[in-house]
Length: 124
Image (cartoon, rainbow, N blue to C red; front, side, top):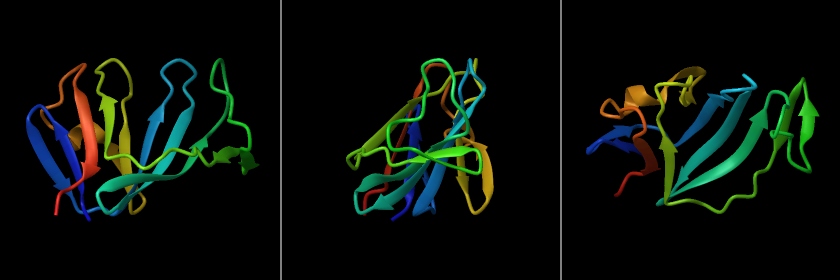
């Protein structure tokens, strides 16, 4: 099932069944990554990683340090919609697949500062 990206009244379909959502913490400048899978009509969070720690962002209990990166299972129930706020004042979210990343707002061209970008499984 493909991934739908919606913002500003426009829905873009991405031919992805799995993707990584990544961002850099605006204060600590530490990269976070989450691996997601489109499963039926839901988004399932598989694993998350954080490339360091800092004020208010310690790795969760049960995290495993491998090659300098904390890996953990976020234990989040599958979501119908993942809502993310776009900001012109931070590096923003990236969507990664097949070894390449691009700013998420490129897949949501109508997303302006403060707008919500919604990710969901596209309807059948």
